[in-house]
Structure formats: C-alpha cells, structure tokens
Length: 133
Image (cartoon, rainbow, N blue to C red; front, side, top):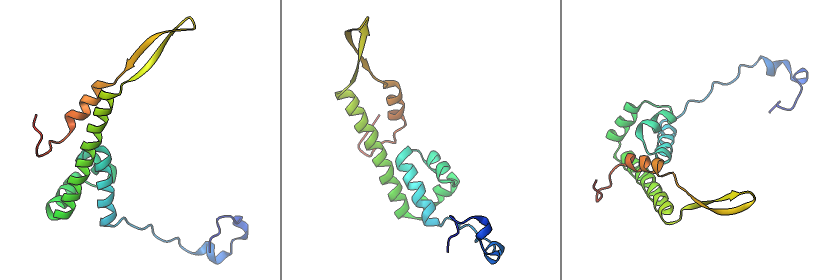
C-alpha cells in the first residue's frame, strides 16, 4: 500500500514505525549490461567503466574471464566505429550551409563543418581487422 499522496498526519503510526527496506544492489549482469551500453555510446573502455560505476581493471578481468562478454564488447565497439564512419561519410557527402545576410539581403552561403572534432573521433577509433593506418 502506498501512502505517497496521503498527508503525513493521516499515515498510521505502525507504517511510520516500520524501517524502510534496504536499497537493492546492482547485480553483476546489470553492471555488465550498463558497461556494454556505455561502451557502445562512447567507444572507450575507460569512459564506459567510469560511467557504469566500475573499475577499468574489473572490466578487463570480465573480458578475460568471459569470452561471451568480450565478444559482446567487441560488437559494441564495432557498432561505435560504424556510427562514427557513417557520420564522417554523411558530413563528406552532404555538408551543411548557413546563409549569409547583409542589410536584409542574402549575399551568400557559408559551409559549416567541424572537421577537427570529426578527425579526433576518427583517430580514437580502434582498428578493424582489415583496416590499416
């Protein structure tokens, strides 16, 4: 029975006297799933471990001890690499343009790119088996 919408004066004394339940700990499966999700989002083992709230050495041990988990991590990294490469090809093929106005008249377009950030992302990518520097 939930008393969330009830004024505190109307809550029975025996309910107020009860000790609240202890918070549940995250299971190992939940920690691993969170790590995989963050690895897919950020593409870096260190960042994924920090965001999942586990030590990077622990995640390295998980990958060494559990080959299925290591394979899922490799799949997550390959998804990240594919996303970054797809974004690079989209930016290369379809640049964005911003119109330039002067005294109420359109006088031209300026091409908007953030190639420096894109190159930093590409530099961080792990190498695929068939890919070389």
